[in-house]
Length: 428
Image (tube, rainbow, N blue to C red):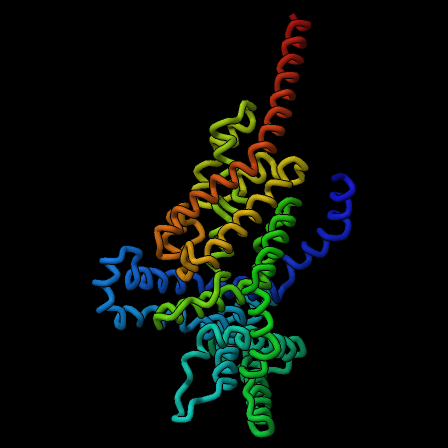
């Protein structure tokens, strides 16, 4: 374990730390997070239109077309909103005008979007299908904007001009270049190969990444990597989600579209699976560990950690337990911390693949307590039951390691108490 820790600290941690702080990945993560309120609102309407109670669902079916409007207006605008929010976040990290960058990226997105035969904007490209071109265009727009700003190749206005006016003129030259380049590339692709920028990005990026992200092995690797990072003190989900979140959201949006169309859901893996199902209590299924601390620990330290962390764990906040126990850099608890969510992930995937539990398609706030999150994400009571089973399985996995650590701490606490009594006796 010591050699493994040394290897991780020397080779793995520096790379993971740099990845977590990489400017463009942080902008993608922050931009996607900005879309979350829309997706949660859309999910609420999705639950209302398709509730888990059969009689209620039959009654609400007559209102489904009307209730689909806010669903389409939220999930269906994922790419459109993301292109602005990602560009805004990246521009702010460079300390340049985020509003102008966001507007220019939005314009570039529309320029790159092919129209239908009757001249309308295809709504499907505004949602998850347009998410990856949105990421590419947002980064391209900000980098070009930054290039012109750094070299002062912009229109300068007197200091007496209001900020809103000079910002607009500052964006004029780089904006013209950005739109011209995107338009020129799109015209060439359409003329010579009958392709659009959306087609190119879908072929090169979206389809391969979605195949990887939707696979069982891709999900298991992500879960292992998230918890390896956490075990050494790095916020694992932030690092991995910086790369994978667009894929997971795109897969979920496809499930939503299939659900609205009355078709079989195509994916098990998606944002609900990766954010909710193996992270009950937070990363590491730590609600199970916190319950063990609270109910069975003899060590005063772990009992106090359980009491202090149970409230946070119920709402899937794992830091009090992870850093309070601690799990970080703890060779005893690191093993079940990785093994428990991995096992739960496998059980959940197999259950959904066999049809025992419905595939998740509803995005709920990550703080939604279990087991209700299991009910809400799948729309089935079997989801609630499976989540309870998962918590019990995680507790069983944690238990022998917990007992080993609890005995170790109890022994240390007893020794410290004995030493204190001896010291007090000497002082008297």
